[in-house]
Length: 332
Image (cartoon, rainbow, N blue to C red):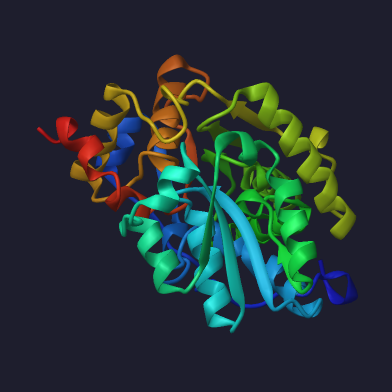
């Protein structure tokens, strides 16, 4: 994209983020694994969401918004990044965070751990919503935005066509860093926007031959629908992008674990082993499951052993620090 066709974009990411390789991680996974350190896109707001927010906040500012609102789970990395960027830009932030029992959550002191602490430090207004309410999150935020009048709604995970352009550009960045295309680019998939951008970006830049999205919650059919919709939206912003069906992408849902944000015992042990052999800190919600999924796909022969793989480390450290007790049994 060049010239007038480029959507307005603000600079939030410390780019290019590093590409690193650890021999012990190669041995553990069974492939040549290069890690794209998008956990280092910035400071406390770091993570993959920041690349999407460059485009989304640019549009919010262009529309004259004074408030931004978004949604996620209680320990949402995306919500935390949104709140911090809003504070940086002098905007108000409203976060709709999913909890099992909103009435109970409102009655008790809010635990100040992980992303929630950072949300509060950034001055975000937190509104608790139930799982049933969260299913109607887009309508819920639209009503709230209409009441406020000067609000800009950022969808869950920043995952729409505009936000996905952040990972189209990330794959352009990769192409300037690597001396040859990767066989596979792999990453966690929780809302579909990163997956759509990576698949389109890998195809248009030739930076990777296949894009693998490892689902951390819903199943393959669900994400194929979501990614398809987001990719179509992305092409309305940049018609030079290929159609999704012209890319080689895979949604792998075999490493979802017991539930969203919950790992199996085997996955927990793998997360700990990765940290101990490589120094890479993965989180239980996204990157831990994705790296486990990558290793499993190599073991099954679906990704060729010894393949040259780009793994996008999407962040999640703050969430990891809020879930330490859940990993106690795996620490030995």
